[in-house]
Image (cartoon, rainbow, N blue to C red; front, side, top):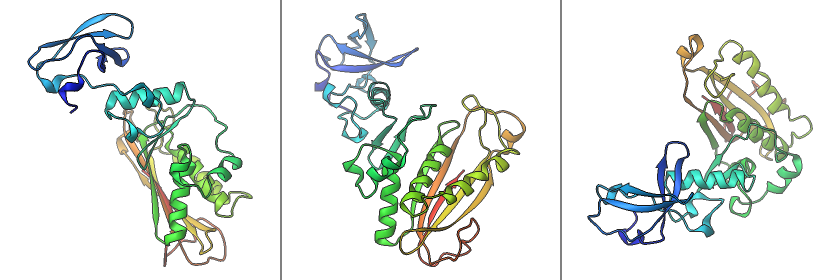
Length: 290
């Protein structure tokens, strides 16, 4: 918790709101230990009394204006729910940016629209670059995993998680597209196409409608992409898992699922197909969704 001295006149705080979830407010006087309420002025000009039973009930403090729209949440002075939500909102609405870092974690907001930020020119811009040198992007995470795999010859994994309809499958698709381009399969991105081509077949017998997704997948996917010693894609393998059997029969409104990407460097294979990865002797790349 922030020190009590920070709750002085003019300090910015966040208070709960039934419609906006959180709204910004400003302290109109210093807080003194033992006081049972704060006098606040909301952003719309209204004054309210905020009850304080103990110091632990004090509202979360707001961040300085200079940190508004930071591309890394860990750079915020105060990291809590309203600060995270506000920063993501500012980046999405004001900066038209759906990606934000939280340390090594990439937070993505589903825009429910096609964005022109996944072309080969963007892939080329992120290829070979450090995460800290570029704006947050799914390609930056993919590049970090790919570069670490080829440099250290160790298996790498990327976990994509979120609730139904949050865009996990699309994020996995763009990640595979990145690997296909930098891994030498840019002509037809055959690995990406072959893996994703299995989705309609699997989902036709196991999808369900949720409150946020009319076509929510009921299958987890574990996708392994193999790379040769030169960093080129040489094969892939996918396994599926049935999730939440109840949702195949009737509707349930929520649920988080996960996508795992696992990068591996493997020996040379003669052909590129989905079932060539029978064994891994060195290292490899793998995507698992469940």
